[in-house]
Image (cartoon, rainbow, N blue to C red; front, top):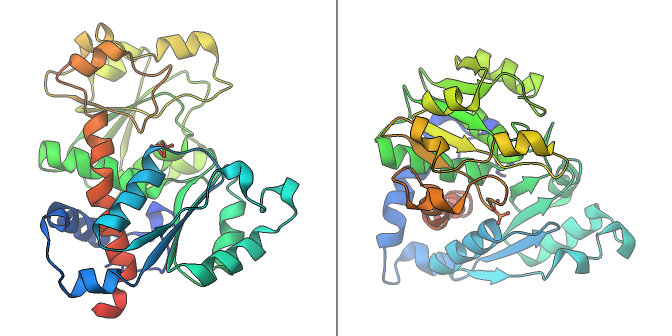
Length: 309
Ligand code: CP
C-alpha cells in the first residue's frame, strides 16, 4: 500500500518500501483467482481513463489491470473528443469534478505538465499520472515502476547496477526512471557528453543528492559498453536528425555491449531502436510492456484497497 499519498503523480512520492511492496504484489497478483474478498471489493470499483494524448501501453494495461482485478473500466474515447480540450470550452477543474464523481480512480495523461495539478486539486478520487508532457515537471511514474520491476526481475537486484541512458534525457520516462533509481544504492548513470537534450539541471542535482554516480562519455559506443542496462528514452519531435542517427540503436552498435546487458525502451520506438535488436539477447522492451499489467494491478490494488487494510 502506498504510504505517502492518495495519488501517484511522480516517483518522489514513493519510498523504497512502497516500490518493493508493489513489486511483491506484482509477482503474485496475477496468480490469484476465485471470488475472494479483494475481488468482491473490486467488483464495486470503477477506473476512468482520461487521456488527452495518444497511448497504447499505458491506457490499455491500466484497463486490463483493472479488469483482471475484477473491477470495471469507464473509457472516455479519444483525446480530441474531450470537452476539456480548450477548443471545447470546459475547464480542467470542472472536468475533474465531474469525472471524479463517476469513478473511484482516474488515470490521467496530458501533454502539459500544468494540467495535472489542476486536475488533481479538483478530483475527489485518486489520480494516477500516466504522463504529463516532457521536460521540467513531467513524469511517468507507472512506466518507471514497470522499468524498475523488469530490471529487478532480470538481475535479481537494482543495487549496484550501471545504467546507460540514450535518447532525449528530458523525456518523462527517463525523468521518472532516474528519480526511481535514486532510491537504490551504488547506481551509476552513463550518459553521452554532448547531447541536444541533456539531463535537466534539477534531475542531475537530485541524482547526485541521491548518491547516483554520473559518468559522461564522448561516444555512444562507450555509453553502450558501460551499461548493465541500456535505456533508450526515445526522441523528441524536434530532435536534430544527425544526433538521432547517432542514438539509433542497432544490433551492430550493440556489439559494443556487455554480454549480459539488457536494452529497455518505454515504446513506441520509431527512430530509436532497429528491428534487428529484437533478435538479440539484449532486447527487454516487450517484456517490460507485458509487465505493465501485473505492475499496474499492484498499483491499483495499493491505491484502491486502503480501506480494506
Ligand atoms: N510507454 C508508454 O507510455 O506507452 P504509451 O504512450 O503507448 O502509453
